[in-house]
Length: 112
Image (cartoon, rainbow, N blue to C red; front, side, top):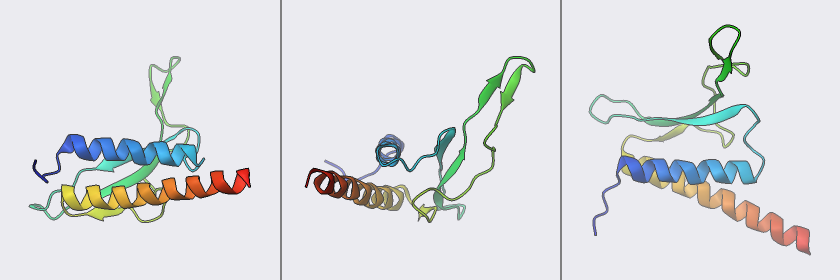
């Protein structure tokens, strides 16, 4: 078994992160999380951002972004994940685990 992180591994971790945000109500309606794949070779970091969902405008025949198309910080704060896939994976994993821990704590508190 190798410890190498693939793009599919990173995409899967991003999906888990997004699911955790949705479960906690931290992802605003009409928005989505995007991953900017970095490159250690070219000095670009892996980052996540919050951006608006595209909505097809049938009248005009193109996509509009009613919630904006620009990138902003994700709901969890810092957008920096690391310079390599492995660093990005570990960072996303740590944030996701924290989100799930918060959700579990909320569930225990509500039941009490």
